[in-house]
Picture 1 (cartoon, rainbow, N blue to C red):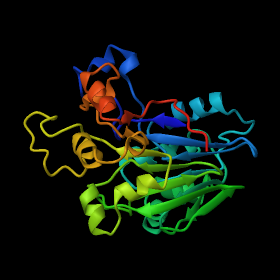
Picture 2: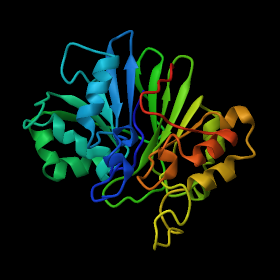
Picture 3: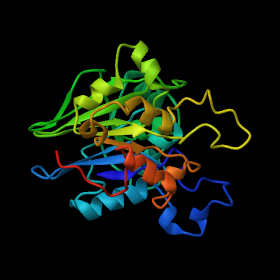
Picture 4: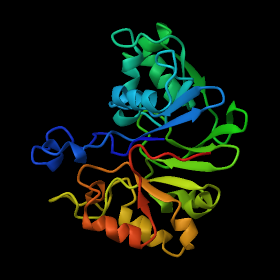
Length: 283
């Protein structure tokens, strides 16, 4: 289940005084996150712990309620940028006071949480228990349900950056909220086209729509693939492959975040989609 589609700062972002979402709540979007539910075992996981963790946990509770609080069998983190891990604070003793929530992390990400406050307090108090991941090694969660991390090129000031492949008994989902460029991944020997072919739905980084989106700034070196570039690169894929792509992690300047924007028509005509908060994929 999609729990959020916005870039780390949310929509609208702090300080964006003129953004229409301040006046129109229908335009507000939560920070990028997925929820995963196994109905057979009544267990739930979240991908990313965002600044919108409270609302996202509540949304998960409405769709797949459980008796315990927070009722999470685990949280999978992609990296150490503010929109992707800072929601862990709500598991601490100032808020939920959770006990032993598994947090799945790559090795550097785990050390970052263990060695830096206030996150180290979550570990020492037992609010969270770190579970170390290995790139390319599937994590079995339930019968027929696995999650596999894979490294992607993106700013690594404090930790590695990964995406995830979430595989159920019948279908699979790709989750890449942050990546520098598809071409840099090519240099690593990985093609996004091949990864899309392995899944049924692909949630892909589309932080910015195109160059010139932020007035007065040269965006050519921004560490994200423009949505327009992704569409151009993937335009030669068969229609069924393009239909798998759902763009996510949208900046507050990205016109595609507005469901009524003209660019939405362009995106859909070209065979792609923008992810919607609340949408569900059955695995």
